[in-house]
Each structure stands twice: as structure tokens, then as C-alpha cells.
Length: 401
Image (cartoon, rainbow, N blue to C red; front, top):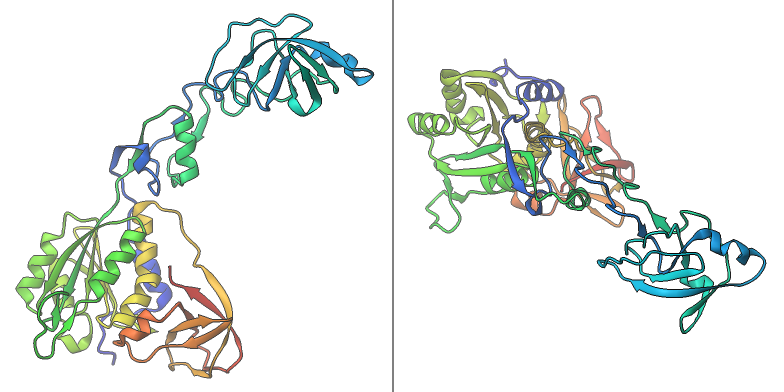
């Protein structure tokens, strides 16, 4: 009999977690210069035309197109009656036989309906010779040609990229309504864990996981609160979890393996519901998922390599769903395996590798080896029914961000 309670498959674990991670509903209004990476909570609607006026799309001369038609057979001369630059306005009204020198982006003078590119003109003082005809509308951008007043430019639930922030600025808007970043509390557990910077006692190690998890969560849209280290004490752990109930998610590191007296599971069973304890994968079997007052709680393995791989497998999709960030397909690359790998019997296995010159070098040592984590570029997945991958075989590597 398995010492793990409610042992589930990899696929069931993913499904259970996502089923209990509700997208954030709270919104806030922020300045657009802080909006990159955020998710829109309402449509962005154009209040004015873009561009707001007819303008030149090329450097050249604003003309009445009809005046240039004869240039198909012979050169046409037009009198220059002024010039206009981007950011300026002009009260000149074109009449037949005249033109205005104009810069890209400058507003078209009244009466002009085309721009002759400077490459097809020759100028002598106040006279321009046109060597090629233009049609009405040539080399100009009409008001509202890009965006019309009332157009929905960006829809709710759109991830704001730098280009989309620029599009919002083009509308003249200074603020947008976005969903708040989900608040995630990270709690490290274990009497052997010490915060970096503190003096190590005998048998103690520095806290690695809460920093790794915090970085991954931040990278995927969360606002992270690090609780710090909680010793293996029932009341202290219960108090820490209860104190984190204002968060949208709680992530626990360590304390979920059978060798740690099942205390974390017991605490969570007292406070809420444990949906699974143990996943049929290697590394990362001692993973659990619970809910307390509808708040999702993920218990990650204590070993750094197991914690890292499970964070990408389970935690990233969960927090992105809460944050309303789009589902992101893993970045992958193909490589040839540097040496023969034998799979763990009966469990799906995730093997960390370093990729160099198209070759995947396994770097997995033990679940607790820091070098396995720091040297790895990603991992390969070995299915349950696969016993061995031979040296030189092509594999798909899922890359860490």
C-alpha cells in the first residue's frame, strides 16, 4: 500500500489543480506606462479617429491630383506657395496650379488630395516640376484610416504587450482598467531550513525553494509574499496557512513527503480539503493539492530539483489561469541524448538536462542536488510505458524560462 494519501496520475493532478483555480475578478485602474504584462479588464475603445486628420504619408508636395495628370506625357510645373511640417498646421488653401512642400505626418492643406513623392519632382526656387502623375488619395493617410472613433481596439482579457501599450497611447488614453495581479503567499517549511544570510547551524541548509518559487511566480504574473521559514511545528504551520488566507493562492515548500510525519497533510485536512497527496511522477512524487476556504494550496516537494520541475509542470499553469494570462505552450527544442537513460518503473519521469550544440546532457543527480537545478536548461519527459532511451536518440526538451 502506498504511504501517500490520494495518489493520482500526472494528468489527474493537472486537471484537479486547474479545476480549483478561478480567474481573478478584482480590477484596478493603472497608468499605461505600468501596463505591460497586465491583462485588460475592459475593452479599449477609440474616442477619436486615428489619425485624427488627413496627413502626408511621404515627404514631398501636397497637390491637387488633377493638376498632375498631364505628367504622364510631359513635365508639369506647379508653384510652391508654402510648406508644412509634422506637428504644424497651415491655413493655406490650395488652388489649381499650386502645391505645398510637406513632411511625412504633416496635416494636408485644404484643397490638397494627394502627395507627390519628392523623388518624382525637381525644384527650382518656387517652382516644382512634377515628373510622374498621382491619383487622388495617393501617399496620404485619411482621418480614421487606421482606427475610427468608436472602434474597439483591444478587448477584455487581452494581455498587454509593449506594442499594445503603444496602441493605447495612440488613442490619447493615460490609464487602463486591468485585473490585479493574484497575490500568492510562499511558505517554506522545515526545521533544517535557514534564510540566506543567517548563520548555518549543524545539519541546516539555506532556503532555496521559496526563492526559486517566488521568481517563477513573479515571472508568471503573481504578486508574491514570502512568509519565511516555518519550523516543523503543527501549530506554527496551521497559523501560517491561516494567516495567508487573504491570498489568491498559497504555495508550500517541503513537509509533504511521508518522511516528514504527514504533518502538512494533517494540517490541511483540519483546515480544508486535501484533493490529492502524491503524484505518480519522478521526481516530484511528494506533491499535494488542497483547498482551504476555496483558496488553492499547492504543496511542493522539499528537494530543489523536484520543486523546480514541479513548479513548471503544475504551478505555472495554475497561477497563469488565476492571473488570466494566456495559456503558454512550453518552449521546446530537439536534441540528441548524450547517454543512455533508463526510466523509473511505473512512473512518468522528468529528467533535467543541459543542452549544448544540439546534445542533451542529463544533469540529474539526486532530487536535492543544487547543481542539477542550476546547470539544467530544461527537462525531457519519459512516459510510464517507456523503459529506456538510447544514446543518440532524438528527444524533445522542454526549456525552463
